[in-house]
Amino acid sequence: MEKCSQSIFALNAYMPSKSTPIVPTGEMPYSSLWGQVIKDERTRLAIDQGSMARALGLSQSAYSRLESGDSTMNVWQMRECARLLNLTVADLLMRVDAFELQLQQAKVEVVAEKRTNPAAALIGLAVLAMLLKA
Image (cartoon, rainbow, N blue to C red; front, top):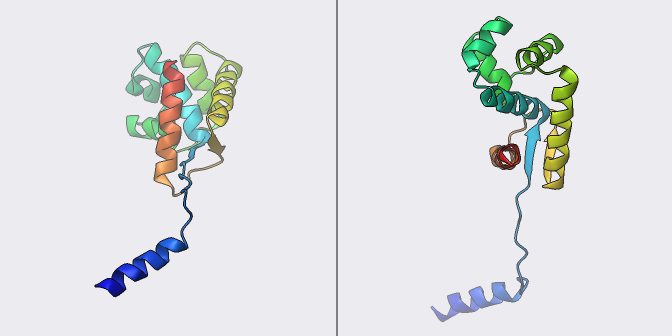
């Protein structure tokens, strides 16, 4: 038994005395950011997903994938979403750019497409949700 405690002590001798906490960083795909900004505006105007989907000629589930960033909007869909929200594409893009800047300041990386780190994506979504509510 004593030999075991000596081994543990020997291992502790090589460990740093102060540990550096690992702070997870978040990330968000650009398509998710775009979709979340549209979703926020849509819910603010009390427009349901089904109405947006029908206007775009999509099923509700296909439209939901656009808002979540699982699918990427094409230019025509962006324009139609803006029109349905009584905005211009430039207005939406300015909002997306503003939130992207805030996310970067909060140490959330905006990436081109989804990666395989679900924790980073959840952190990114949580930060964006806080920013959208502010």
